[in-house]
Amino acid sequence: MGEGNIRIHCRKRERYRCRACGQTFSARRGTMLEGLRKPTELIVIVVTLLAYGCPIQAIVHAYGLDERTIASWRDRAGAHCQRVHHAIVETGALDLTHVQADEIRVKGRSIIAWMGLAMMVSSRLWLAGVVSPTRDRSLADCLLQQVRACSQAMRAILICTDGWAAYPGSIQRAFREKVKKTTGRGRACLQVWSELCIATVIKRTEKRRVVEVTRTMTRGALEQAERLLQVSGGGTVLNTAFIERLNGTMRERLAALTRKCRHAACRLDGLERGMYLIGCTYNFCWPHHELSKPTHLGSACTPAMASGLTTHIWSVSELLTYKVAPTAWIEPKRRGRPRKRSPTNPVTPQRPRVFLRKGVLCSVTS
Image (cartoon, rainbow, N blue to C red):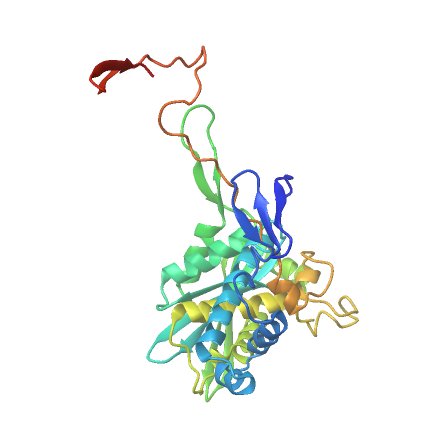
């Protein structure tokens, strides 16, 4: 993209051709609408309803579409939103300052899954999400590696989590860099960021009411953590209130996360696609109520706008038609003998081929 190698192939069908690789492609290449023949307005309406928590069965009765078609559109939209998230959010350009992470237990149709989520407190930006059938260390590792992909290197950061024992180790494995301590020969060692603070907030409940909250610093000083809390606007004490509010938004917007329903999730990949659809529309398309108050920005603002990733509120249509740049094309190596002779690359002479034509013995040298 941007190399001047794109030419028009067919104006009527809106197809283009790449002069580098010789392949043709449509104008919808790289978007969610590629290969779909239904009207664009209908697709955008259906995806918008899915992003607002409308069950698939209700859309089937409202628009007369097949249930498998709507599920396919949801998966397509989720896969496209995942590419958009990787291209815009996971670029290592954010100064996170304060991050909160938590997980949701998802009860599906004959399955139990876990959805790990992480967010940036200062801008309410959804940073990462992982869906796993088990709540183990690999879930925490994948979640924190995604958070690390969003962050600038070697910055002061506070990460607040609940009492799950897998979090501190996963955070330290994700937020470390190679440091060469000695001069000369030798390998560099991995060293945890010096300004990394890890806080643990454990709540004890009785009859669904919180009766005791224990706050401890797993790594770092409490004074530094309080300073980062003040900079990010994340409260006066260590807490996980912001990620718990995001968990409620996910349960409200993603129909499969409803606690008692008839449209529970039955596939992990479908649950992951729905998570990315809700996360991207939350970041780019929905004005955040708290960020829009006069105490913050004072006008309608999305988490992506507060983070500096965009300058306006996206529509769902703009999100679905956002063109993600493809991977760089690499010219394949030529195999066999070279086509032209050159002084630098001489071609060895071949043996003459002898054959019989009309009773006469002939020979040809190629």
